[in-house]
Image 1 (cartoon, rainbow, N blue to C red):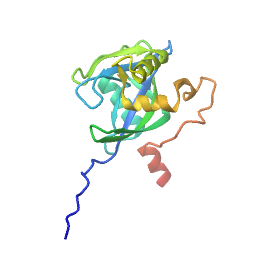
Image 2 (image 1 turned 30 degrees about the vertical axis):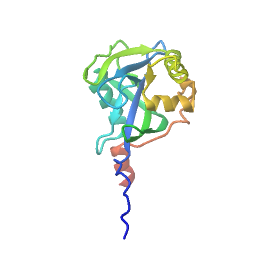
Image 3 (image 1 turned 45 degrees about the horizontal axis):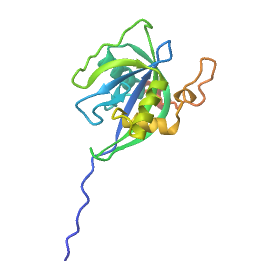
Image 4 (image 1 turned 120 degrees about the vertical axis):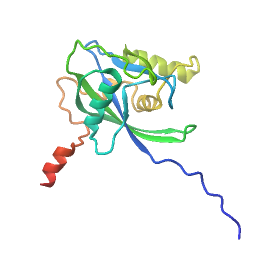
Length: 184
């Protein structure tokens, strides 16, 4: 009887939250990853959802852990499907928008073993990094979830609500307390 070659076992798909923070100049907080998958790429703060944690709790926690900033979760505005082929990792990334509780707060590098530093960049700066990497003109790259977000729309502002706009495009995910109320 011939033996069948088993496919290499792949790890489960994980869920990550990418926390998007914009300052009053319309710039986005980004950092350069080190020491992990996607090393040397530009990322938004974020990470894995912990067991039992809501998306909002994850976004707020990750921002605090990585930047020491206190933020308010506003909502989810995009989702990407991110397969890191070489690393054999697969993530569903939820892009959340948060707002600073203190507009004068300054990001602090809390995890220097994971990130080189935090910087404010315009969306045009982010697009320049993407375009230069795509054309081969630069080795500088965006983290795969952000690359996949750019493939959905080249203008992030098309996904974000204006101050006057009703948030009808946003996805709503209840937290644990809201689920408990619904079940009661």
